[in-house]
Length: 258
Image (cartoon, rainbow, N blue to C red; front, side):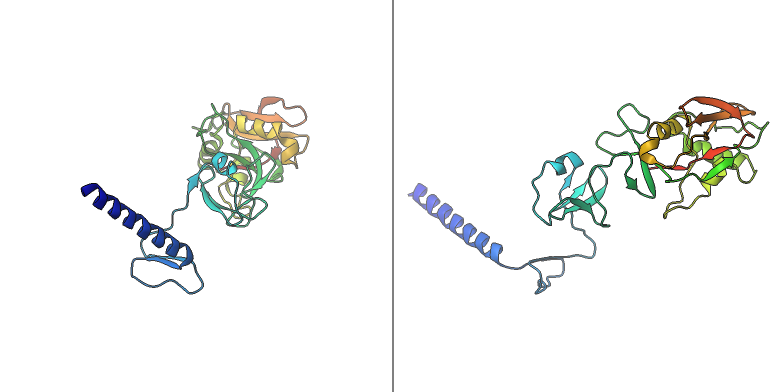
């Protein structure tokens, strides 16, 4: 009858499926656009001239919840980097550790000085962004520059405004050797996007000064201008922030965003 015929077809299909699955588990496999066979040394080879291989995309929290086998590969969507497990820890493909970043870690040309938190300008949920500080000072006595000249657009004090401040200072003040220009012209450890931190960014450096290291117990310049005469600085002896005449010499520590 009809039901018997249907069941026979289902059973036949299932047997064929299990046989095929068993074959695939023990055979080499090639996935290609040109019909070429798999390389003898590979269990799986993927070939294409216009397509890529897309591994599982997971957040860092999801990745850390996995019990990984050695060699497991994922794409870390929090750091936007592929990761693999070496049997001890997650690694980036450049050979650096892919453990969660912490303040004080060496990273992308300097030292992690701050990691953006919810409510901070530029914070994106599920992503890691923040501030990297150079590992040492760029000057022990640079002036802010252009006393008596107000620099339009260089008055930002919040997190995320230091880069714009620096660009405006460099464009609007032709003096050489000023704090912002020293940072703007810096090429360090392969990175050339350094800038003089804003008032609030400089304060983050002060708060983590021990973990970052290399700070003097002296005044440091920020890129935040107050007027044609004065700009914000910070005393790294006690954290006190105040304005100072722009022709005064202060220490300089460059930062970059990540």
